Length: 443
Image (cartoon, rainbow, N blue to C red; front, side, top):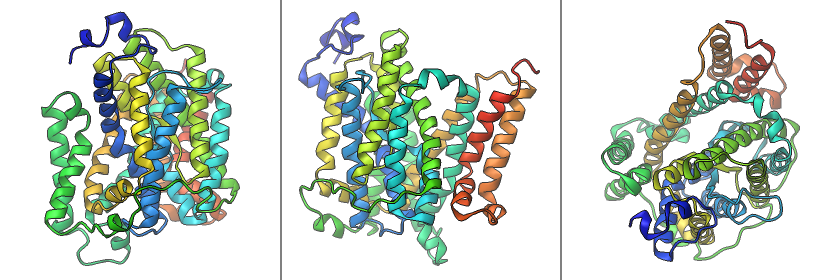
């Protein structure tokens, strides 16, 4: 398939250009493959933090909601209604940015408090669409790079624990934790993913992590590490259940999620700007930026009502648009409809949830490492004078230091302690405050 078969150069820059169904399907599936693994992984991590059985009914449900509401939020972006939606090919998915905060909320306050916070933060995030242009200067590349780097570094221990056999086995000091049968599966994923990433092109390269997970899954099945009991029990069709885990409003949980919504909103602004620049060689309009932020928040709000986690735009799909040169939003709309269909079929979620935890560990080691590298890439363009070096040093040393020594916060109220020991909020708050307070003309 060549671009001349689906439109002229000018037509391909037009988000409203309709391309033939065959190429549209292929490109839409490519977008889904590029984001699929990253989209479902946060739900599996949160299910584990909540103590749900790996591969059990609750994990299957959370994975199902991740697929369903990634598709719904994407439709908000591509089709839009009223002021909601950028009406650009913006692929939405479950956000890693919230994971460190959500783990803390689930462990200290439970699932009801988590979804109460997701709902309120979604509304707050929606409101940000009306002011995003005025607060964008709070998050220059220095601050955004620090926050994204901190997210990746905060999550790396999760990947290592999963690759070694899981957090539950670690807490029980199980003798098999960390043995080669666990690490072997993780290494299969890592090596296959890296091989496809660097030695293939196009769809295969974009879906490298997913292909690595599939390879690890197959090896796990052949070695007896996969249990399909949950797949047999799962239904062929099910609709989401409102307030499945209850709803509870915890002030500190809401504060933490709302603060991370600021970071997510800025990430979405950056992605929409990247789509407009990479796909159409123009700047994104204010209407597109505000509409995209509205859709980000509203999609998260709707997801929270049914047990779905917060959504954000997916940067890897921005790269796909730059690579293919196709700006047609109908392509991403088709991908969104595929995700919605998968989200209504619990057997699909059960197949994902049956993945051995060490296989997932190999995948998240790669994914979280890429989050760190994305943050470092943002920081690479920063002017490294004394001012900016101090901001970086203080943000990461305090944030990650507290995460490494959580008992240092033991005298704080439980809810406030939960926010602090994530490491992420202290790092983000320090970077934003110091960047606003320290004059930029200091060398």
